[in-house]
Amino acid sequence: MSSRRQSYLSFAAGAAISSAAWLIRQGRVNRQCLYEQSDVIAEQAIERLELPLEAHWIEANGVRLHTVLAGPQDGPLIVLLHGFPEIWFTWRKQIKPLAEAGYRVVVPDQRGYNLSDKPAGVASYRIDVLATDIRALIYALGAERAIIAGHDWGGSVAWALPMLYPEVVDRLIVMNAPHPAAFARELRDNPDQRRRSWYIAFFQLPWLPELLIGYSPRASAEFFFRKGATRFEAFTDDELDMMATGLAQPGALTAMLNWYRAIRLARRTGEPRPIEHRTLLIWGQDDKALGPSLTCGLEPWAPNLALRAIPNCGHWVQNEAPGEVNAHMLAFLKSE
Image 1 (cartoon, rainbow, N blue to C red):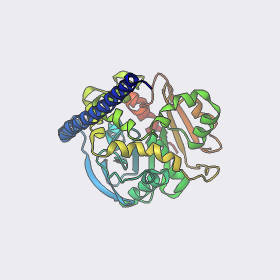
Image 2 (cartoon, rainbow, N blue to C red; image 1 turned 60 degrees about the vertical axis):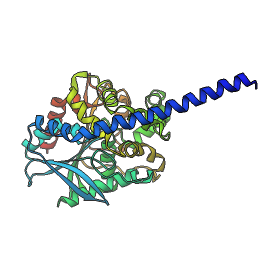
Image 3 (spheres, rainbow, N blue to C red; image 1 turned 180 degrees about the vertical axis):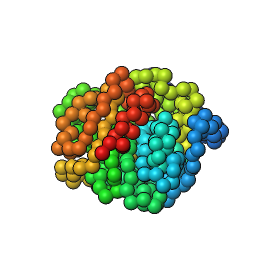
């Protein structure tokens, strides 16, 4: 190799290393700036909701879960589980209607997210561990069972709960989260779903996803929530600021990405246990990541399932179509 070529390669390598170092340093500065404003942003966001909310840190399965509660203390318990890269605030448009309908609404930041504990290690985020968190949360609130509603990864936890701990689930509501058996089927047989799921492989990489997502939490919130939506008006600028604070919390980026990295640690237990509970699946039909074929052929795994598809609606269904989602939820909960 000529000395000139060696010089070019050395220069290119040095420039790449310097650029990466600058991105890392600048990302830390950006996250720190937002983190320092997060309390004020949260206070203002909660004030705009005009809801009587309680916030508690609840010990569950060895972690402290920051949990928002609303509604009558003696009402039926309903637990709302967020997904990636959300926080409890993603359910802001469901909390009031459910509380006014008499439900005790419980909305945790799940482990690894926002203000909740962020244990180290990928194994801390296996789906069975995440489901055990929610069982422990229900018991910590003095209840034996609860209605479970989940979106995205929160929906995956919701699917897992009645398969692992059927005794703690009353009814089940899932939003734009595939049943694990249907997801495995579509990844195996459906090239379109494999293309849509490219990001799962990307998130397995070390440090690079954290670097890109964490460089500007506010820009990442804009990318995921507003640009990832079909109904772009679903998120105001103030709401995106609030969602971005979850990305700025120390340790949160690696912890939330570890949910994806723990997929490879999932325990293979054969055919999943059928879910006998009454189940409502709400699906935004224009989800860019999860195709509508994931809602098909679920009868063997969830024989008591009702599907409510919402057209012209993307992945963030509870934000993009809150009126329709709330109507479907309340009708399902009131039905015999």
